[in-house]
Image 1 (tube, rainbow, N blue to C red):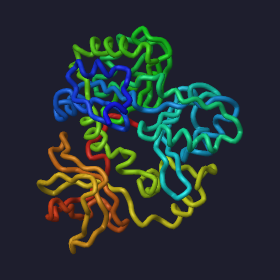
Image 2: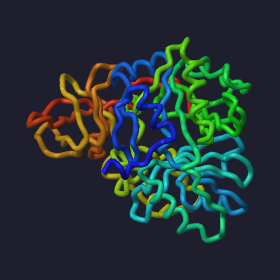
Image 3: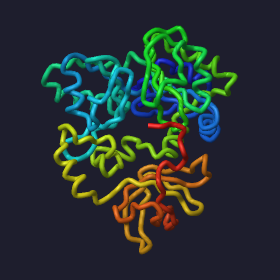
Image 4: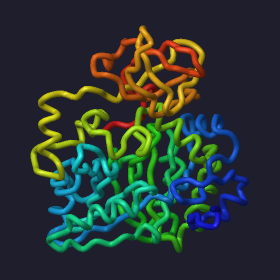
Length: 368
């Protein structure tokens, strides 16, 4: 029911801009303003702004904050220093993933976790069940707007709005301060596009003013508002996982190619099982593939071998605007996961040839 959808603070602004609004993760969200293709190229070549305020934010504070984060996340948050962020996941007890998330160290004993919109309540309950030592947990998801300003011209477009030297903020680092006149803004050199840029965590009461100033400052650089449609094609060109498609409660981080955020230098939820899996190897792996000819792969299309035997299925797929070819992610048997291996995508009864390729599909501007 449409009336059950939550709205972001700038819901009316998006409607005034002519956005097509769709239900997404329980929110009424802009999927596009012009066309997915135009918006995709705007971000790859210039700069665009996404309103992704549906994402969830949890604050974790106090002397037991780090212990709790270490217990529930796969990555090693003890490596974080103030002003640094880290990608991680929340493993479950069955070898799958509760969610993927970002961990921000704001200060000593003060962290922010950024989780997927569809999993806010699920993640909140999951983390709380492990909070046996009394870390201070606060769900601030409804207080924060999140704008992702992405593209090669993002730093130039945003620089007039802040005293922080945006060009000197390393990837997966952030500063806190005044931005576009708004206090307590987190300016983070992160994103989900591979095109460079920043994510801005803004108190809701300043969201409209900040949005308007970004739109104005970005005008000389060709900045446009961008919807979720282009966000999906941009992230897919980078091979970034989308929770619910490429990773979920039944996919192991090791199967999903997320071994690099799974650190066995500490104990965490189900770490013993995952460590054993790493030592023994996995039966299937998430891979990227490119269509050899025409054809657009879509989620849940079967993947088969030359004999027509099932070897997996597509988890995400699209026509890549940058490559003008069909690309996709999917799980296949490990023997078929090497770049150069051939698979076939079943599209409307036809087995269309595709080749496993090394990710990302399109080179990104960012360095981890």
